[in-house]
Image (cartoon, rainbow, N blue to C red; front, side):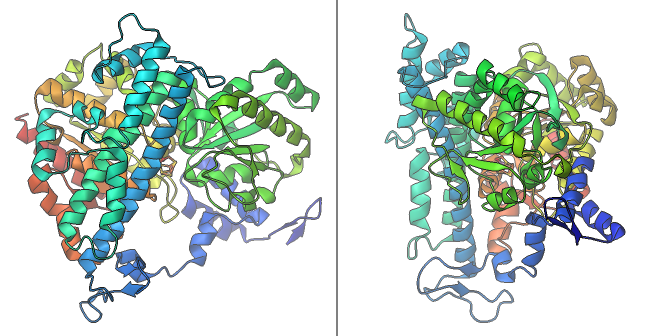
Length: 640
Ligand code: BF8
């Protein structure tokens, strides 16, 4: 240990071993640089915590431990010996299926509750009760009103927004047994849902019913449990998540292509750094406005800073990046690293994907963590409750706290990587259609001609079990090489940004066909479509192409992948992809391998009904092979 100024100690570690460790953890150079700093500073991160958990519980990994009731916890012998049943009599099939439905419902709930909050702000804005919000995308508001059968003639936008918001809020617990946005799916896909009995009936209902079904003594048929899992996921993708996306577009604008920067190098050496982390853009949108306040800008100068620097993190970051070009510091595993740069005055958190230990990381530096949602309080954080009525005041207060914390930054402990990476983002479904000239015909023609062989949605998280970004970037590079267009959301998109795949020049890395299409349109071969709730944009994209072709989504030469997923939300996304007819490869094994029956259903038998299933393949090159095979099979099915 070395004594540092201020009394801190710095660990001495063999530089060769340190380098090896750092390279094992992350692909990106800037991430590696700060991982090295974090290790040297003695800051514990997710990688250390994962090491401390080794060996992880084998029963848990296989999904065959059950802690659902007080007769347990129970576990099943994975080798076919005793015990074969839990105390209640549940087999491995039931335990695995119930655990999976539990995870999925948690994920669907997280997305959908986020959606509900966005729509509540839309309602309060329409009624004039919010502060700092407006209805920005009136065109989209009118289109959605039409979908809901709301008459727009002669009405003010606020009146229409009010009716739209109420119609959407009603769908969380509707008794009409139908979610309006699910009507966006092509008829041939909806027919499959009807055949399987998995048409989503309402957002809350499917999640509550999931909780009921996994109670001891309810669902004992694993097939039936998993069918409900698919229905619950559809209520997320075509319900809660889609409402989050569309509501945010109405309030903050539908994204259009723009350029900005990504990686930890977007933090500033001489400005007040505020990191906006989490998933819901409603408060951070007002922080963007507050940072423009002249008084606050002057205050920043008074404390010796050269200005205020807002940067995003995770999906709140993606939302701000897509609509305003706010630079993004990184994806899920970067949250601790951003703090370890020693340059963050305030990290504002809303909810989801926030490490419960983030305040412990912050204690190692001068960073203040500010929580803003009553649902997501963290010990050690300063809580500033966000309310739509006072949003702008709260946002200004937060920016002021960051400015006042700037003098506490210790320049000797700051390290910020050079050279952020340029990205082109903002590819909403509408923007992609516009880039194609207003219809999907040019893309369809390119697919038919084989210039573009298909498209793949790479989505989902980081997971310290795999080198950060390696799965995302390797898979994306493999696919574009094979003339397969990639669309991305969430942490996957940020990974591609760091790796330089989100710029038009990256077309050089694509196969000849895809390269020519990207060059003609001036777009990257990997398109950033937004945050994780914006996976709903991928569904709409697929639905619109399928409708133009007169087929189902399940017939299209498309696939999905989540190479580094960790969250329950990712379980829900992968499931609504598959339920919508999109073959999906997971890079991290889900906790289902304790039941060969469940594995067979998910990876094989679903194909008979959905023309899609799950696959598990940790090697991204092999995953690309699997995907290419499926795309070729589906091309054949379409006769192209
Ligand atoms: O919702 S990809 S780690 S940040 S869960 Fe979280 Fe996963 Fe990132 Fe966005 Ni999505």
